[in-house]
Image 1 (tube, rainbow, N blue to C red):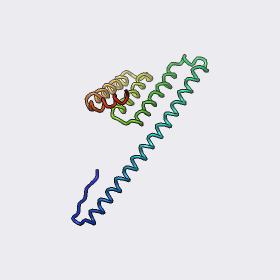
Image 2: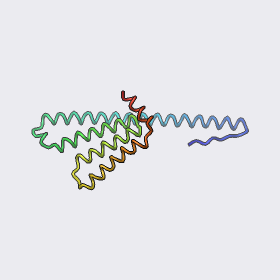
Image 3: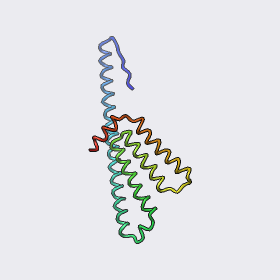
Image 4: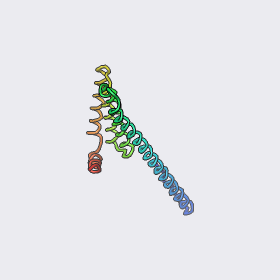
Length: 151
């Protein structure tokens, strides 16, 4: 949050304006550096996910009895799906994308874990809460803009 200063002296006012302009440029540079860093991290994560997916497909065809351990296969494939959602969130950070990543991660936990029924109930309640947040707290204009971008 920026504070605006005023002075009756034109020289002081000019100096204040130069400082504010410089501060805006520095802030803009930092935002660009952060955005670029996020893109690099997203790219590296995507590369790692593609490599792990390739390795998983390779193991499917080369390891005897790979499909006998469905739990292991689901664990690996759903981890890749969560990673892809995370990359999507890094590239386009919107409230809807963040909620989707959380929904996928919690759903993965419910599918893969065989915890007690109370833990599963808590996960289902969390997913219901995320859907309620999406329905009632995210503006329709944001969701419609996101749907238009996908098409």
